[in-house]
Amino acid sequence: MHPMLTIAVKAARRAGNLIHRAADNLDHLAVTKKSHSDYVSEVDRTAEQAIIKTLLDAFPDHAILAEESGAQGDSEYVWIIDPLDGTTNFLHGFQQYSVSIALQHKGIITQAVVYDPTKNELFTASRGCGAYLNDRRLRVTKRLYLADCLIGTGFPYTRFEHLDAYLNIMRDLMQKTSGLRRPGSAALDLAYTAAGRYDGFFEIGLKPWDMAAGCLLITEAGGLVGDLQGNDSYLKTGNICAGNPKVFAQLLQVILPHLPRP
Image 1 (cartoon, rainbow, N blue to C red):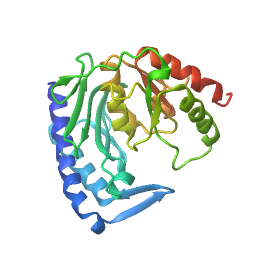
Image 2: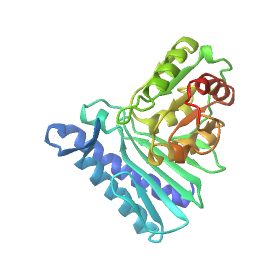
Image 3: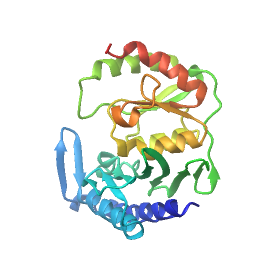
Image 4: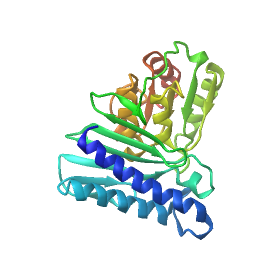
């Protein structure tokens, strides 16, 4: 395992342990509402600080971009962190949430960790070295036709300006796939796509920390990732489509006609 990835795994497991312990005491957690349907708990903050400390102890010159504390430092190495992706699930005791940590070097994601503390599933990737679940090499699915595919997504939950387009895409996909799923942690959804549990995934309006690690997992597992036009600006736009190469192209064909004209 790459030395930088080893430290990221250590950080993710530390955060996971904090989250796992807190899950037994949900009634006593301090929770703040950031915006409509967007919550942050003291666990998000504690886990984020544990991750940042672990990373900066090892790499004091690196920069940080984290969901709760924002950007700090100036370096060609930037750690992109979501300490608890799926906070709403976590707060309800719905066991689908994860820790996501990625390293971006000169604008390119080079290391990725997505950790599910409830199932002890550790998804990792280093650029050029493949993607893994615990010690098992990951490959995207080989399904050829959208009609046979299970597709992951995430509903809009804070901003609704694209809701009509999203619902139209969903209506089409319900009829053209084997099923749609929306468990509520985009980082895990992307990891599941890399692991072949989904054939593809799409969402509108994500943040870089939701996507950065999961996208490298998918490309290292042989899949494709793009924005909703199939281009590579997904970390900037927050709009993402991913899947095995055949499904990626077919997903885009369904999505594109519903997008607002620029």
